[in-house]
Length: 361
Length: 249
Ligand SMILES: Nc1ncnc2c1ncn2[C@@H]1O[C@H](COP(=O)(O)OP(=O)(O)O)[C@@H](O)[C@H]1O
Ligand SMILES: [Mg+2]
Image (cartoon, rainbow over all chains, first blue to last red):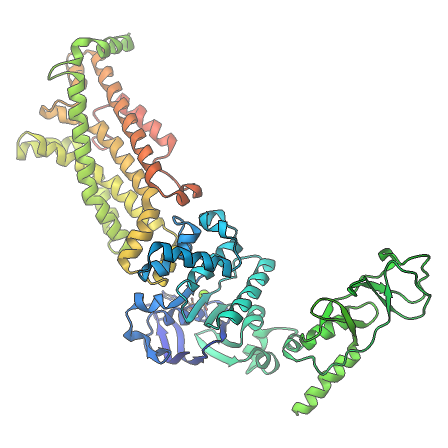
């Protein structure tokens, strides 16, 4: 657990970077600090590992005042990942990851063994360990940065815009990877970003900062989207927040109905309704429009491409999107293996959303 | 023909033996250079590391090193000779003074040049100030640091000739003698020897650089020592006016 108590940072030039911050980061959660540039996110983060010391106030990590710990010792117990990865160019990937264990006095072979485990943990092939940072892609460098921060198994991990410099597709992969890692490792993670989508995607709690280093709202992402504390937060979380907040609504209330199926490569009777074509593993291949005549076995060329798929157990946003993007108006529901289990309509989903709103009062 | 004369002088066996022979003079020349570069390194490398690492005294360092650069080496040698008398000391001190600025600049720039994100990460991992300096900043500064050593060596090799003014038998001797008796063959021959020595020493340092600089940095293709173009210009200048190391004007 990390506790900020009335923490203020005023730099020598008079800039107030963090203004009277009171905040508790719960153990074992990913907490995201988000806000426009210059609002004090980095400063708040760097005060936790004493890269910056507060002007006033107290920071406790697991109940201990960090000002009572020698900075190098404190930092060896706190993982730190930065935007440019900051890998040591003169050391191999493996030795980069072994840094903190070596600093803590492990033998070289033990530290390298541990480093190899971590490369595997973050999804990098072992042979990458022999390379130098300059020989890696941006996404790979960030993974190495995460592995390096985790090497000594610190309970706390600080991440300052770790994925901001990589392209959006890679970024999404890295976010998923982090969530997977966290499910396994259960660290206390503080994650800084300026990207609200990233914040609500990975954060269990999100702290929105505003200019002047003031905490504007600290809440679960769903609350943030549903009930922004003020105009600043409402504006910052942006357009479509009503729609995006559906990501946090459980879809179990939506009943998955039956959907007429046809099988590709087989003969098809004419019909006046939309039918979903599936292959022999019941994976959806596309829609057969009403009144389409098919001579001989069904080929995929005559099918209309399907919309997004709704995996049962996902949020209600997935259900609504599946219905809205489907040419038939029927959102295809699939199981974890991707096999069709049925369909939902937008009307059905909206009725559930309405119901939830009314029951909340 | 001046080059024929130089050739004749260079290959005259008479010039290759005795106390005034080419081998001995080369040896003396080399010793002075070595002493000067080592002495200057002992001062400039720690100073450059300190200032680069702490970021304190950067303006003082640049100002001081420019002041050193402005000192005319020949004047300094003469001055030290007048107050301290003949011998090795004054010449060596003058050469050390000459060699300090490039080494200082290379070391300081090398440390300053290390990616701030890398240094930040090193601190954030829990390295102490000393560990950051030795394990991260110094290895990453090596290309520029060794570049500074190479620059200093080139200057010192060219300028060690001035020792001949105060009676020391360096490769500056044939230049002085040649000039005095208008024996241009000897003059050019001496200049060629100095240039050769400079080239050989630079090659040796280039080899050392290859061996010392970590592989990960060589892959980055960072600047490694003096720029090719500049270096050859310097050699041309050096052969043409061998008794001026650029700062003696
Ligand atoms: N070392 C410093 N000296 C003076 N002002 C600083 C320093 N570091 C940051 N600031 C200022 O403090 C404010 C907050 O900075 P920062 O925490 O980096 O913001 P963020 O990470 O949210 O973009 C900014 O106005 C920034 O200019
Ligand atoms: Mg920042």
